[in-house]
Amino acid sequence: MGALHHAASRSVNRSVLLQVNRFLHSARLTRFAAAALRVALAAGFLSAVADRFGLWGMPGTPGVAWGDWSHFLTYAGRLNWFLPASLIPIVGAIATLAETALALLLFALTMTFALGIKAPLGYSVYVGATAAFYLAATAALPQQT
Image (cartoon, rainbow, N blue to C red):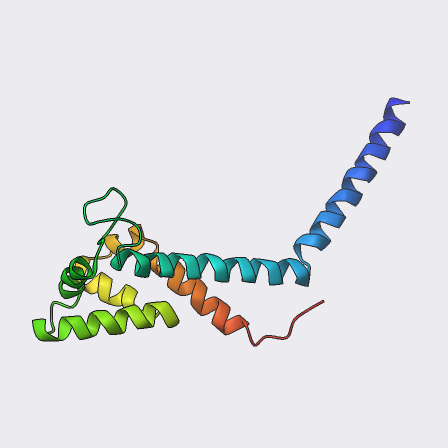
C-alpha cells in the first residue's frame, strides 16, 4: 500500500509541475509581466519627477532627495559639471521631460561620469534603463500563445 501511494503521489506531483511549467511559460503570463514591469518603471521614474516638484515632501524630509525645483537644479548642476551654470535650468527641464516621457539611458551614463558608478547602481538606474530598453526591444516581437 505504501509503495502504491508513493507512486501515485509522484504522478500527481509531476502533473502539478507540468501545469505550473505551462503557466509560467504562457503568453498570458509574459504579457502580465511586461505590463507589471511597465507600471513599475513608470512609477519609479515618475516618483523622481514628483520629488523635484515637492510632492514627496520638503527639502530635508527623510526619504526626499530634492523636495523642490531649486534643490533639483543644484543636483543637475553637479551631474552636468561640464556645462555653464546658465544652461543648468534648461538641462534640468529637458532631463525632467525626457525622464517623464522616455526614461533615457543617458541619465545613467551622466550620473556615472559625474558621481561615480556607486550612485546609479545604488538607485538601480541601470536596472530601470535596461528594463525599459528590454520592453521597447521586445514590444514588436510576435506574441506566442
